[in-house]
Length: 464
Image 1: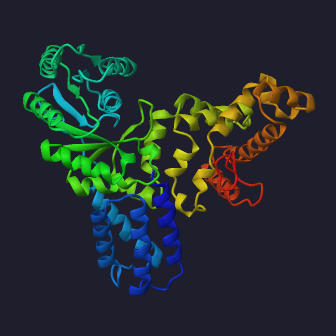
Image 2 (image 1 turned 60 degrees about the vertical axis):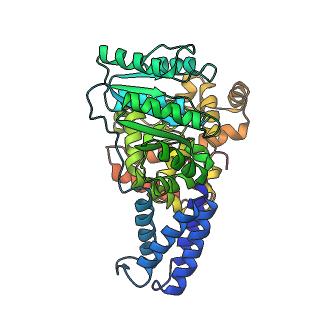
Image 3 (image 1 turned 90 degrees about the vertical axis):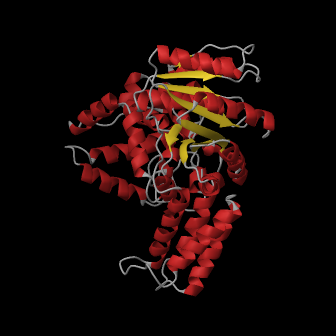
């Protein structure tokens, strides 16, 4: 998400680097670039105008600290305004109600409402430690109820059984009674969607809202619809007292216009953002972190939180002890590290959250191909345990056997062996637990010139 916007803004900021100070002339040039970048990202015109006006007001001749370069000062101002447009902090779910707290899901058909209901249930169960029940009152879409039942089983939450012969009001009443009987903390109600806004749908969901009195009414909208997402959210907000928005399919939107438009147009905060199809691909929306990512400055807090959840700590500690004892870093260890990166969404996802991402050449993220990491795993899987421990044993005939077994070429295997050697050098810096040495080693490799770098490093992305 935001790839195109990040590329355009990074180019704008680079043009300001080296300027002695911010003047009205160079500010106007930069603002013109920012305006074009935001419009290309499908940000609503009213939002673009507001951002540009506020940045202009703050940037010309003021707020430029002596400790900052003009480029840095301008970035700081743009970041503050992006955060202001999207909200200053994460708007948490309000679950302060006598159990069960009811969460009503609204939205158009195809926005990913049912999948989001299951993702939210999983998040509440795992991250907030709440007992959750989900129910579908969508009696119109074929297999809608069965879809939610399947997803509820996958995320291991309670499912209230209903069928299409019942009315939505009757299903909702029965589900609420059952949730109370079972002392469920949160009841998530998945409502019917339509292909367009119509009075019948609005009337039905308004009736459900009056009946259930939900603590949260979340509008689920497809991020790829751009500024139309904000306009649709406003139409729903006019009919329903929405408490927040969930942006779905954000991983498929390289522009990011919806994220920058929704709150400004509706006045309602974005509470969650969906970044993939997997059930764990829903995360709370933090405006400050998103603004940082848009400007190519990374999002270390989200990266650390993701690592805490998804990295196998037992394996990581085992490798750390092994390295500390000076036992080396073999191909089996290398394979495990590739797997850990895949668990965290792949190298492109990790890079997106790394500081300095905006300083990479434009389009660098597109050079990263996670399929190459899967190819590397396939190559290692085709080796014997002895070959993984001691790659020096790989002669011509062994290499031919491995590449035939993994469906790869000799050059693919040689590239993997080269990258493994580079990783070995980095790991040697860690002998004795010296993390500072390791970080210096990484820094040296990133600027290592032709042939330098490690998997995912600039100029050495697998597949580049």
